[in-house]
Length: 115
Length: 111
Image 1 (cartoon, one colour):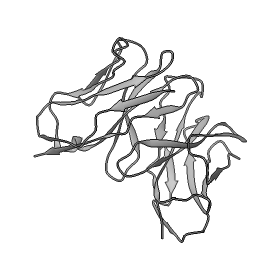
Image 2 (tube, one colour; image 1 turned 90 degrees about the horizontal axis):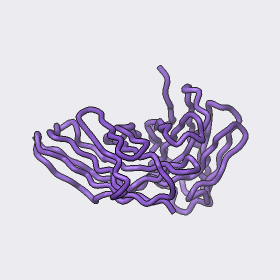
Image 3 (cartoon, chains in turn purple, blue; image 1 turned 135 degrees about the vertical axis):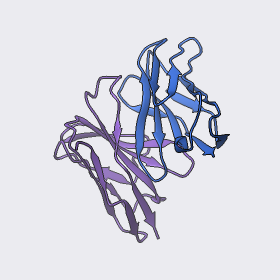
């Protein structure tokens, strides 16, 4: 089955520790995205990548880092510089970065709790 | 910049009632419009989309029409079920390929 996988589903970390969230897709999509969702709020874009070895900051990139070494993978690192990292993190992917009609497909999300 | 405004929830309905969730947008050019649904503890799933003015998107009994003159994309369903309880997000995609989301509307359908 084609789709997007995120792991782990739940993640607990101590304050001050870096943590990396995994996102893998087997849909042969060109573009991948990371969003943050806080309770009762919409999604905010953290980073996105339209091609391997290239990525751009979204609206709330501070305290986060990403890499895109493979087309299928787009891991997100939440660093200790992120002041309020507890949130639900969603990864997405899509075809044809320049096609406005192409939909984004979402993974199941990772809930990160910093203790 | 681009923005999406949707009605705040929660919206509480009885089974078989009609549902309407209002969504209006601001964007340059001619964006594509989307409705996504999020069930508890899960990611988002595309519900329907429309890519040009007067297009109607439909899926699972839900419908929305792209109204350029009123910059709106309201979501409607004639008879809701308990299984429709979820959070619904309106979104647009304009130049640059990034999705801009509304704040989400929580819908609770009671038996």
